[in-house]
Length: 186
Image (cartoon, rainbow, N blue to C red; front, side, top):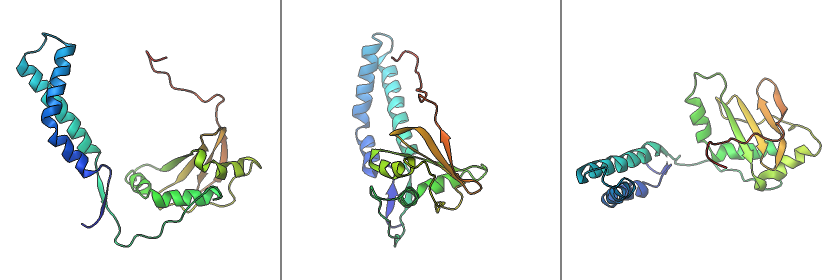
């Protein structure tokens, strides 16, 4: 197959198998300490075996690999002076899996990508925000992507949306941004 890109280091998955016995022992001890006298040793061993097996199965299900191209195209670079649309195009080059994942949902009419710029990329955002103008050109997006949403974590006033039909539009954010509440958490 040649070089591949893994979502997990294959050695990590192998290490989970190597330490299975130790993890099962720790899981049984934890259950015994939390629920003293509730389970026999055989039940504890079975519960621990199932628990560890489920974790390893989950890790395997989250792992994937894709073949890397034999001659990858050069990836453009972006820095603090890069314009927003150029920056987005660089990000698409760095994250080719975005288009692959969205194209897998071909039954959906809207397949949009969301980019949140951190402080390291905020200068591209602020050059647009000061004059209040949308980007001057449409981005080159991979086939199958129907739209983009772009926001900056340092600017909670608005986000930008782009699609093939309407181009760039600005959308205000609620002030303050809603924060999810979780029962039992402060």
